Structure formats: structure tokens, C-alpha cells
Image (tube, rainbow, N blue to C red; front, side, top):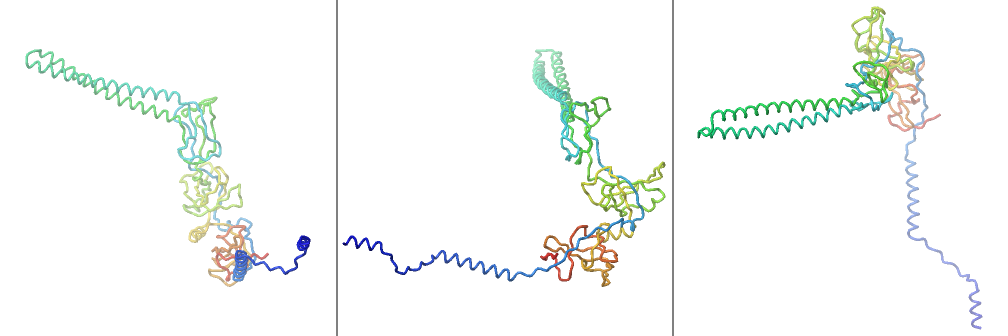
Length: 422
């Protein structure tokens, strides 16, 4: 009976109330940290300043050739390099290595080619052996001279005791003087041999061709296996040079100006250049010099013009058209530090006038301020203005395609974060 009762008790369902589980201490800390982080996030969001909403305007390039109004003379010419060289070796030899291709950039002193140096190296070895030979002969003469001096002293002492004749002493002295003269000759031979060794070493170095200055290879004129002869041009596989290197930093423009209008051009005069390949790109420039001679057949005078902008798109022998600016425009450009440009057009509400403003949007102010938009940040920028009937013409300080903020410019600040409103 006891066993049955025990079994029945095991099968009975326990309906006593379950005690609630207590949260662990670590879980309580985690929940508290989450609540605190949420509170901090809400507080930070609440304190964030409201970003100003602005509209965007795009600076558009002014169509047409606007610099013509400031130009007093136009001329055509070409881009030329003041520094270029056809590189060749100093000696005639067979080209065995060529390390340049058209378009390669090279540094000053860089090895660009090598000639066959077997003959030059053989002469160098011969000269080195000759130096060793004359040094050995000099050492032998030194030994013979020292022995002759001892013999002369010995003969001289024997003469005092009347054991030898005066002729024996004289012969010993003659031997010393002859060896001394031979020693001086062999010292001169060493100088000659060392000079020949230096010459052989220089001839060996001449088989290595280096770039004379930093630049770009424009012409590759030889191939390995050809004979390079800088002295004369031969047929077949004989070349006078291996290639042409141009210093791109020395590029300038040369134009021919009609001699009837050369009085309008002077040194340091402002100008703008337009490449035939990029007719919409106006490059600021200035006159370097007027070449003091005229071409009788063409009736023109050559003018050298420096390009104030360096760009990889500018290549030698490109066609270019140059507009020479008036003296007033040249001085205005230099005084303001702005480059001469056709300018861009902006709508009203994009420029804050800072010069002699009239209070209208006719663009009569000489200077102004715009806010250029970079992603979601404003950049305050000063610009130089021209005249326009509707909106503004910006002559400098703003490039075509840049985005400008439209709105109440007095409320905008440099570096301010904004929200772009479409």
C-alpha cells in the first residue's frame, strides 16, 4: 500500500503557485545602459540646429567670344618648346639597349640607351695594365738608383785611400745621374698612363646615353642593333640620334603679328590664348617679348607669349589663337589677382554685392560674394562682377558648372551645413 501511495503521489500535478524569477544583476545593468543611450540620442537630436534649406543654381558659361570686347588685336600661332633636344651619343657605336618610348617621362641624368662597349672596355683594361707596367718599372729604377748611390759612396771612400782611380768614381757618379733621369722619365710615364686610363674610362662612359634634362619623349628615332653615328648621317641602319625629349615646363606660344599693328603689342601685356583643339578653353597669358626683327616675305613680327596655366592638354606644335588685351584690362587683371576669363552667368539672388552696389540686381557692383555648395557645406567666395541685364556676370572667381546657393545670403555662413531643397 505504501508503494502504491508513493506512486500516486508522483503522478499528482503540483498546483502550488510558482515563485517569480528575479532578473540577474548584469541584465539590469544592460537594460539601464540601453535606456541611458536612448535618452542621450533623443537629447542630442533635440539640440541639433535646424539646417537651412537652400535652392541651387548652376554657374553657366557665357556663350560667344566675350573677350573680343577687351581684345585690341588677334593673332594666330603655335605652341613651341623653348627647351627640347635630339639626344645622341658622343661616340659612334652599335645600339644594344633602348629604354624609351614615345610619351615616356624621363628625369635628368636617367639612362635611356646603351651602346656596345666591348671595344671601349678593352681599351680601358689595356690602359689599366699600362699604368701597372710603368709603376713596376718605376719601382725597379728606384732600387737600381739606391744601389748606384751606395756604389758611388763606396768608390769615393776608396779614392781617398788611393785604392781606385778617379775614373771609377766618375763612372759611378754617371750611373747615379743616369738612373735619376730615368726615374724622372718613368714618373712622367705614370702621369701619361693615368691620363690614358681616364680617357678610356670616359670613352666607356660615353657608351651610356643619359637624358640631358627632365621631359617627355616625343620621338623615338632608333632601334637596338642600329649604328648611331652623331657625326654624319648614313644610310641603312645608321642614325644620328636616338630620340627627342621636350621639356613641357618650357612650353610657350609664338605668333606672327602683322608689322602694321605691332605697335599695339608690348612686353608683359596681358592676353588670352585659345587652342584650336579646345576652343572653349581660354588660357590666361602674357607677352614675354617682341622679337626685334621682321619677316620680309610675310611682313610679320614674331611675338613670344607665356602661358600662365600649365596643363597636360597643352602640347607642342598645337595651333593657337591669341587675343591681346588692352592696357586697362591687363592692369585690372593684375591688380585684382584675377585671371582674364569670359566669365559665367548667375541668376538673381546668388550674389551679395560688396563693392559700389546700386541696390539692384543689374550687376553694376565690381565685387561680390557667393556661396558655393560642396555636397552639403557652404563655401564663401569673393568674385569679380561685370554688367548684365538680368542676373549677374561673374568675370573671375567662379568656374562654369559650380553650384551656388540661392536665397537670403545674409543668413548664410562659410562652412555652414545646409539642406538642399529641390
